[in-house]
Image 1 (cartoon, rainbow, N blue to C red):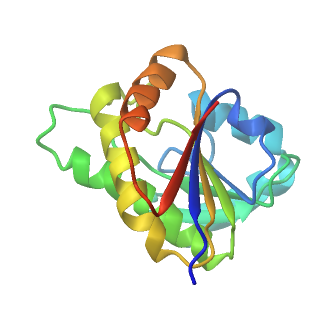
Image 2: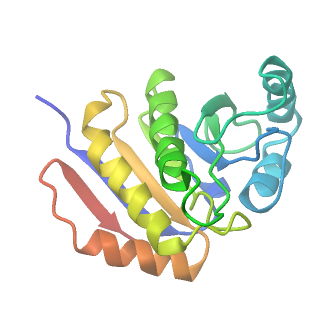
Length: 187
């Protein structure tokens, strides 16, 4: 018998959550950038940054869009950070939707590989990468809903929205969903 999966929407700071894995909307170098990436690097500390430097060197300096890697969470209240690179919004014709979908999907794959039972996502690519927030939310939620039942270890996915606009968009989408295999909570 399969366990009921859960999705929870929260408006808060992703670095404060006690989960098995926090997803970082990273830049390609993995060496820190702006927005969520900057905050996670700053708060996680030297141990996580050292792992990012090692991975950076191993992959030749650039993680492709949609790919994901895991490091320790350092000083954060999680066990792991899954770093994924979301796409920059150009005009919608440069595989942005596919890359964003892959960022969520590959983060889930990586979380399942490291036996994470809980994972929290920020709003990937909607900050300085300028992905349209409504479309990004639809891709994020659609990807998680369609793939979550396939992951044996992941039980709970959190969407952590830092800003009110993203929170309202996610809330609007999630409020209208009804999936008997997934319990949806809005906080």
